[in-house]
Amino acid sequence: MEGSREQPSRAGLPVPRRAVRTAYRFAIGMIFGALLTACSSSGHSLHASARLAAGQAQVARLPHGDGLQFCVSVRARDLAPSGSSHVYIHSISSFITTTDDTTPALLAITGRYPGWDTPGTTIYNQPFSNSNSVWLEIIHEFPLGMACIEAYGHGLAPSRYAAFNHRILLSYTYAPAHGPGTTSQKLFPIHWGPYLHRYSPRHRPKH
Image (cartoon, rainbow, N blue to C red; front, side):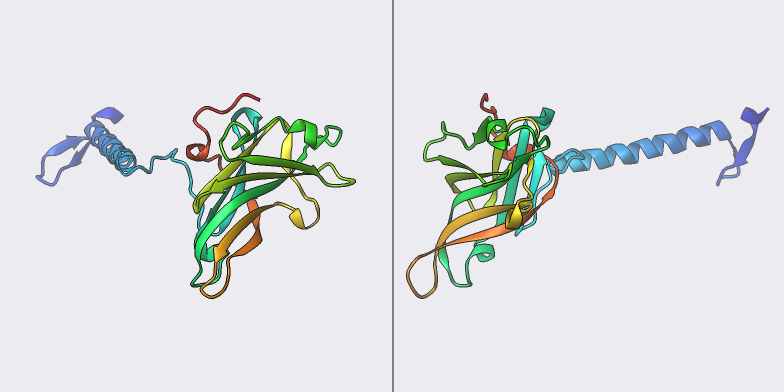
């Protein structure tokens, strides 16, 4: 019978094929398990959140279609000339529309993060004339490195309005190596990426 055929072993003793297959499967299982353990112990599990490279920005859909998350990763040198100091991000602006043109974007945005309940935060919602796009600016002291904002509401999408097409805007100040402090702004193109839950509020505010 097929199951009784044998293969020679290195020691010259017969080894049943079934035993060979079992050992092979066991070895594969051990290797895969070791890989999973190594990933988990190093903090890089298969489902770990991605992180943006410096100078990049992205937009992601929130779980259950609850809105959009905009994130940017910047260093001081991504914003200010070499030798500058005291680089501070004072606001992040996103430009939002809706997937359904019959739904006004200004009404579709039902909440934001950081929101009014976050100390030191001011929010501006400014519709663009003759369009269904809203300039959402959140004034807050954002850190260098990873910074994220969220807009809540169903059916939201990044705006394609004029120069703000799939971009976010950072407003910031810095002190150049020589001269007085300077206020500046910079647009960053955004691409679709994964939802970064570690940069989302632990308890999303009700909206």
